Image (cartoon, rainbow, N blue to C red; front, side):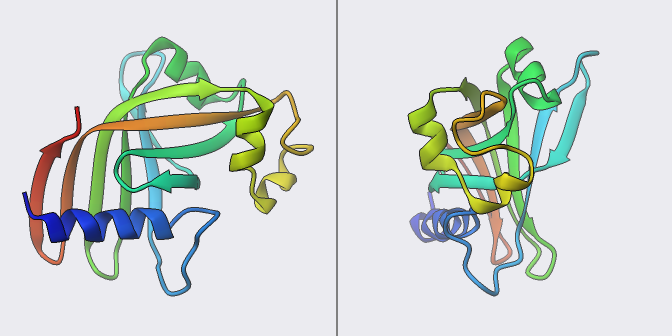
Length: 148
């Protein structure tokens, strides 16, 4: 395992969330889930907080497509990429839907106010993604690994 590459990936993940955005980083997040017909379905999403490759949280509506799909199949792939540097961080694992107000307060960020009436909003939920495997392509190097 290339420890430096994993550390760089963790740095990028941690600096590309709504709570810790670092100016100059232009990475985008994509979440891939299984749709109602059993096919892969990917969509862009904003990460709220992260702990490197270990876990990442996202916020969305409790009755939106993502939570409905997660209830049927919690397996997911999260992809963080930047076109400029041609870097990609692919994480596979499982997602848990969290609705307790304390967690929603911790994950809340200002842009969510465009869709929800605060962290106490019953329609808001947190998607807690926990990584099981990773595939990193950074600085023209690729490494794979398992966390479980």
